[in-house]
Image (tube, rainbow, N blue to C red):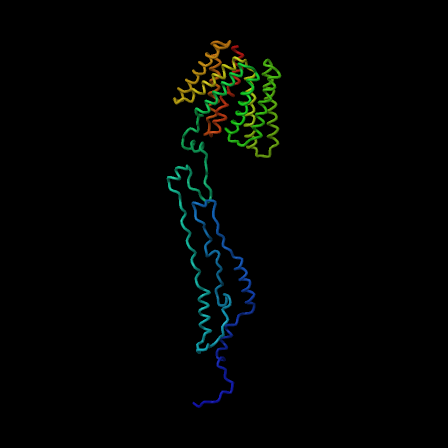
Length: 393
């Protein structure tokens, strides 16, 4: 074969022209790639913690849900890096190799997302100590101690201890001493009793803070005290009942103006009326005879202290009533009542035990014991002191 001179008519890249034409992108491809690029730009992966930051590891969305998967088919991925199509300096056809490598990199399987670490659960000892089960992302039903006690068949009654009983006894002695001195001396411990009664009743019913209701009940007690002092003991029943009627009507009007639900308004109405009634009826110590107040207050103090002694319930009740009757006889002998003070002391002791029992209901807190547990025995005994004092006086 003879060598012929090269006239420029032969192009060594001409035979690869069809392959180069296959690499040309279809019309409108660049606009499609720009749209896909914008979609990828706004694709986000959210990773956050639940409200339980200690017991559960943060979770991330699976990669299959957030990763962008290109459409299957040739030419779906982004443009390959620009390179001269054809032979390189060594004479090797680099276009085919580059296209194959690019397709392998584009259509590679997405990497598997790392599995989240298993949630750490607290040890059984810590769970048992706290009284609650482990928290979950859907929420854990936190029941009260009273509800748990009912579910387990236990009594939700916790009686006030010796410290509230000692405070009750001290307040009772102050009432007895004030009655022996003068009506205005009796007014000081009586106002303290009415304030503690109003606050303790709302807290006993789980309504705290209830400043408006407490203030309203306490104002009712002060109004009853003023009405009794102005009207005198002979008109004390009318003054007390009139104040109570006005305060019930006032409480009803205020509750009707409330924007709360029907059940909540009814519950607030009953709590406010009861608290105001107890505070107003406390003015019965001002209406009663001085000797009856002294006997009844000391009998309440003796009954409450005897009730908290470490005895069985039945025996403790009997001992408390006997102590109240004995205190009535002892203090009655110092006054004009004499042995009749035993009946007054026994009646005041019964009312005191009722108030003590009410303050023990439904797993009350320490604040309840130091307010309702102190005041309710004396507040409940006020009507009995007035009625029995007039009956036996």
